[in-house]
Length: 302
Picture 1 (tube, rainbow, N blue to C red):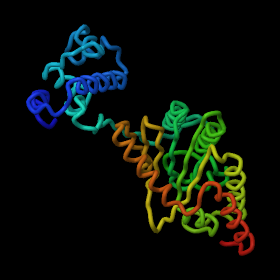
Picture 2 (picture 1 turned 45 degrees about the vertical axis):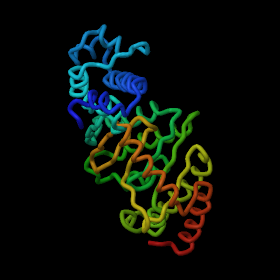
Picture 3 (picture 1 turned 90 degrees about the horizontal axis):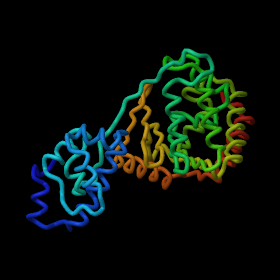
Picture 4 (picture 1 turned 135 degrees about the vertical axis):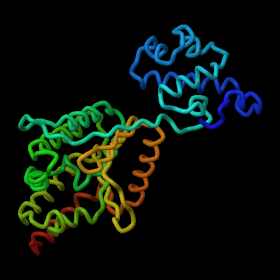
C-alpha cells in the first residue's frame, strides 16, 4: 500500500492540496461502492463503518479525512490500495475474472459466456468497442467458414458460433453502435491463398467469404471500421475492449476479463497503436478484398 501512514505523510509534506485530496477520495470511494454492486448500507457493514460515517465521507460538504483504520478496511475489502483511494496512485482496482468457454446444451443457442459477451456489447452502447479477433471478425464470417473453424473445436459447436456472429452483426447494425476491428493484413491474405487453417477450405468457399466481407464492410462502414496492420511490424492477441468498462482477452478456450480502469486504458492505447500502424484503412478494405477476390478467381489458389 506504499506508505503505511499515507494520510499523515501527506499532512507532513503538504504535497497535495487538502480540498483536492478530499475530492479525489470522495470520487473514488463512490466508484468502489458502485463497482461493488452493494447498497450503501451493505457496503458500510462490509467495511465495518457506520452508515452515517459513510454518508459523511461521501458528502461534498465534508472537510475531514477518514481515519487510517477506515481507509485500511475499505482498501482490504475492495482490493484497492490506500494510495489509489487518496489519489496518490492511478492504478485502480485490480479486478479480473477467468471465464472458460462452455458448450450450450440447447441446439442453436448461445453459450453462457457468449451470452455474457453479447450483454457486454449491449451495456457498452454509446461507447466505442475495439476488437481484435482470433481469425476474422465473427460478424463478417459466412456460415460455411464458421463450420470449418468449429467443426472439431472442443469448446463449442458451430451452431453456437453462428448465433454469436448473428448477434454481433445485429448489434453492429443497431443505432449508436461504434466498432473498430484490427487484423494483420497477412491474416486476410492467408484466407485468400488457402494457407494455415484455411488449407482445407475449398476455394469456392474462400472466395464466397471474401465476397461476403466486401459486401458487409461496404454496408457497415463507418459504424464498423476495420484496420489491417502489417503482422511483420506488430502483434496483437485476440481481445475485445468494451468502452472504458472492461476488456476480455481470449486465451484459447477461456477469457481473461479485466475491469481495472488502468488495465483497460493500457490495452486501449495498445489498440490505438495498431490503428496508427494500419497499412489498409477502413475505407480501403472493400477495394483491397476485391483485389484478393480477383486474384483468387484467376489463380484458384489451393
